[in-house]
Length: 343
Ligand SMILES: *Cc1c(COP(=O)(O)O)cnc(C)c1O
Image 1 (tube, rainbow, N blue to C red):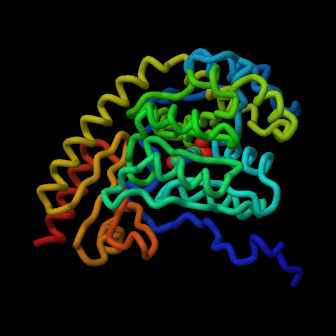
Image 2: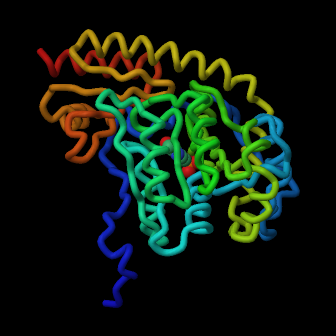
Image 3: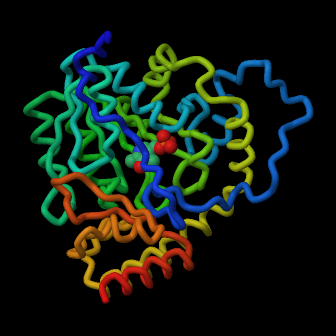
């Protein structure tokens, strides 16, 4: 067999489990509430024509919602594509990407794909993050890119905007990515800072608070000068016409997003109280999921056997779990099932 290149040879494939389930609380997808009616493509939809490579109409909608200019936005096939694109565009082999741990597992995978070196600073023992530790490490290793995920996946920790600004003031020699996949749920966006900091890239997605993960639509927002450089490396036609069409429709209903986000936060707090009462340790979350610790043995397997999927982690986070906030009924079923398990 012809071998893959060395930097990717020993990677473990990112395979999503296909355990049959009744309720899915493992991937922070949330509910579909924006596209409740049947979708009909326009009569003159032309499947033979490549999509709008610049996604102009969608970018116009995004610029309006994210409060920036059309020229500050690039759309991707999920924000994942854009995280990959940025790492690939800036990092020569061996250059460093710095982030806290634990954080989004895909950052390291994208680094490996292009032979960049992923370096992490541990968060505090209560899963809060000390930005000074990240700044110190950056001074030491000169990373090409620094990534902050806020609210952080999987811990739910929200970075204070003051800390983002402090970091941007200190890290002028690195690209700073602020991954705001969950920011609609809590925390203050950094989008307005792109005017002042031309090394800042903010990532947003429709996969979480919009409940549209199936579309694979996300975007990056940055200063025009930086955006103009990134157009050189963006794959043409990366977002398909159907997704663009549906995403544009969704933006006409964003009045509903606020309500959904508010209700999700209420259900999150209720679930948090109920899990606490069952002996779980709960970490404060500004997102649509809870990061928890449980003493129950084989919790993941026991719940999966009952058709409830949650996210478990590898050995260093043994007995920690990430649970997506479900609907009222789903959360109730989770709590009832846990009560049976404990009994
Ligand atoms: C879900 C998620 C994303 C991106 O999702 P896409 O579906 O690719 O837009 C990015 N960052 C974090 C932290 C996420 O949890």
